[in-house]
Image (cartoon, rainbow, N blue to C red; front, side, top):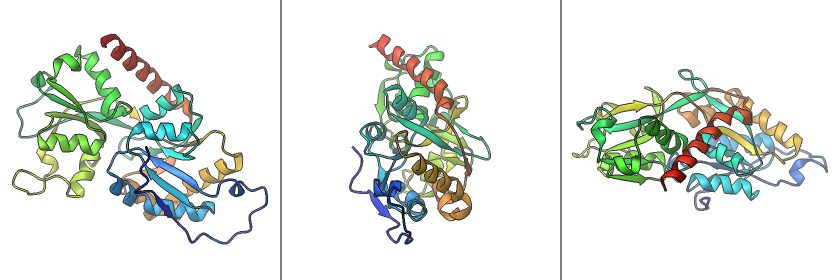
Length: 308
């Protein structure tokens, strides 16, 4: 389910405009925006609050942030028509398309170091003896969510290419539920290796957590990037998209696009807050850009079915 407790209705002081009687705002008195759980609810809310305020003012209706408890909640929210806009991971968006959700990609994040893509990585603690996957036989693996690209689909695909069946190779596989939870499980010793997303040495979910002081060592001191080590990195993965329901009014979709693509200039502070200033301006993208991710998911689904 989407988190109601932390849903934010922002930008209540909207500009006074005289909308035409047939304007889409007469039908949509608010726009609900769902975000996949890369952080805890409070982190998502704080990160997105300025952008919701900007979009509310630009679009003339409140834009309501709906942090999701899991990836499936975003998919089902759009399937049921309860979520007009969303920010997906690549795999969860592909899953939505595969299962008939009428959602349409329109924008994608762009990093100065990796363009439209990112990587899946396996983190271990630097103090551990683990240097490669072979060192982790019989140890515990941390994954994120079955609909996570970098935290589940790509790791399973990568391990299969190495001839590894996680259920037989590792002592235990833990589904943490979010990227933050997977890293926390690694720090706490629940798992010995954790899959996660990584953009560059300057930007990743781990660095976000370190910058927020969320990770402490055994003596209670803040942990540093040097306390972690990457032992495996995937090829480039296309970033997940920003989407809206395909059946929204044409003018409504055009207005959303215009507001989004104007944000890096008209609301630079709000735009920079989303990525801690690490992203360039959004670029347009279409559903067809995720065809390779759909093929990947079908492969992993068939692999899981074969092993079950």
